[in-house]
Length: 117
Image (cartoon, rainbow, N blue to C red; front, side, top):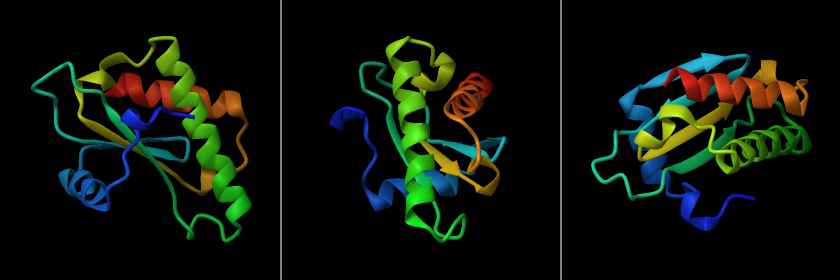
């Protein structure tokens, strides 16, 4: 699980990031990036979203959310996040295409999205 200082929780923060429309998509996962940091000492906050429109079963949605969160946590631990640390906040949005994927596939998708930023 991500530490509390790295989690994005506020609804206002999610809405503000979506309005910027700075996004990339790959393999059923979308990445929305917030504004660039002015102070590099601030941690990058991350949010994970899987809509009810993606799948009606909460178990499937939560599994995809857990896979994305764990992939990001491992990449953060390995210091393999690329330019994503230059942004204040990130949001990963899971789609229908990502539902049946394995952990390794999700990890590869998230790594590619982070390197695209």
